[in-house]
Length: 302
Image (tube, rainbow, N blue to C red):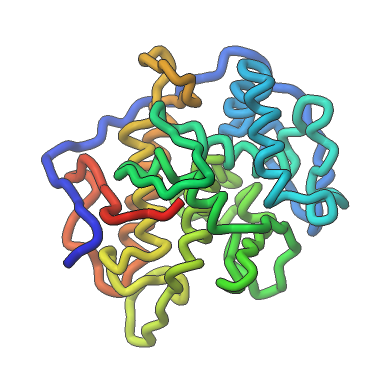
């Protein structure tokens, strides 16, 4: 029995021009580890500034509580000092730093649904991954650790072992690079990072599969098919549901979810569609343009 339900209708995307942020962004430096160059230190093109403003200025106490939640378990000074950003956020957020960009990804992950839940001590299930995604990442990962990559590395993040629940992040995860085909240089929105967190945490249960005769574009990061219900499926599901359900500015927002713009929603749709085309040994028999919702079906222990 398939573990996923994909609902199909004729619902094609309408592309909307970017919605500009009204205020001027703060100035950031460019002290980055691994000799990395950041071409978007203010976080304007990536969307980090937009998230930081909402978290730090609109809901300052909420932001502090969110950071402390992850600091108590996943983020430590010993892993995030020496240029990765520990201490930089004390003055309101150095948006160019890896740590602030990680906080932004975690904030997007936790607060992108008006129905988000946060109950760490019970098993809770709700079909929309936007609702329980942050809870899942919190409980099934233990340590977030940035590192400089080896010379042959092409990835942005990986989960080296199901035993220690550590997720390793490379500079590409925080700042992007010039190799993201189809996207502007250095575009690595916090929404992509949030989906990556879901992807890497899912590896606690399911690994990728290698198939030598496969045409799958992501090579060793491919899964057998969409209904394998692995890391790629969960990442695509999070991105797609965000593109369809994230709260837009001006929408009803009773629980103060983080708002987004049509531009970012379109970006997450495009990323989901790109991953769908290049992440499976057996190509899916559907297109995201025809999909209204994706539900991961079955009990999710949180």
